[in-house]
Length: 68
Image 1 (cartoon, one colour):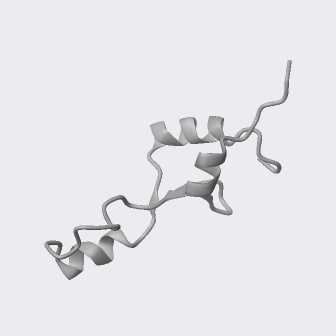
Image 2 (cartoon, helix red, strand yellow):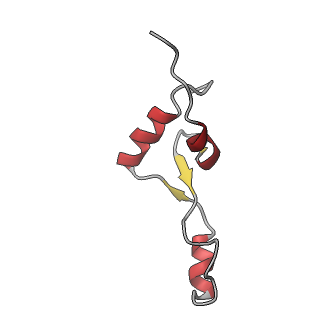
């Protein structure tokens, strides 16, 4: 069976913490920012932890990565 390859798009978008959790960026912070409040834009700037169901998919996509 061939080696598993890391999904490069996922690798660029997801950060793995020391405890193995996956951190993602919020969407909606690139354009049309004038109608969004400062509080909302500030919250969108912070990373979020991937949900459990999504974490399984992300782990599968990153399976080929060294050290994982």
